[in-house]
Length: 263
Image (cartoon, rainbow, N blue to C red; front, top):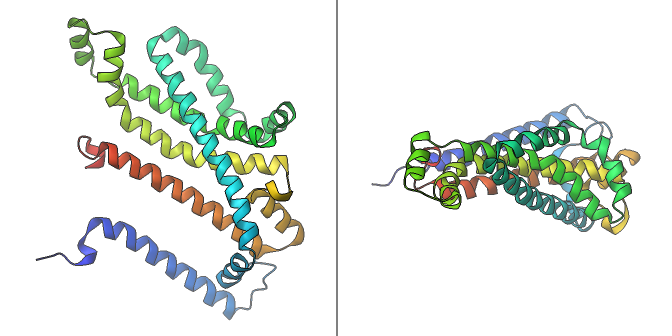
């Protein structure tokens, strides 16, 4: 006998948030119509949907620009953060020398350094990618380093008693132990890459055909076009949610058969 649809835990996790969102959107639409809230003050969901439909080509072009910068920055952050974490595990001296600089870049607001990066790097897309990467790299670095060090001392001694090389210890012992922490860092870094890309676009203020969603928000603010502003914000939110879900699915795929967090 099959279980009812809502008795499935996976379905409950997917359906209930969607139902809650639909209720909130419906209440938003009804309340704003009932109280005749002007569109220049706060738009209704129907106003936002109309702008998405009418200006979809322009919004889609800006969406692809922001998504491209986000994905490039995210991949660069993963490569650099993972490589530096492997380096930290090999030497405490290297970690003590470089970690303060990594913390320095993390605590420095990207708004403060983005103008310098844009001046130094003449290619606008590359400059935006570098700014977003600086925001996203720290979670990958710290989580991967923590995971590579989170191994049982007894297992480390066992590997060394059996004369395992550093490479064998890294690949067969430390790397599997680091995977849960690594994927946790990916979930955080994917969102931060998007935030860094949007903030860098705000600072750069680039318009035209190569403009991202941040430029659409700036233009909408200048024109008091709040439906367009909310439409761009909606696309940014959907992008962040999609990246988080993708990282969660990757984590579940690689950890589901052996780690408690995915079982």
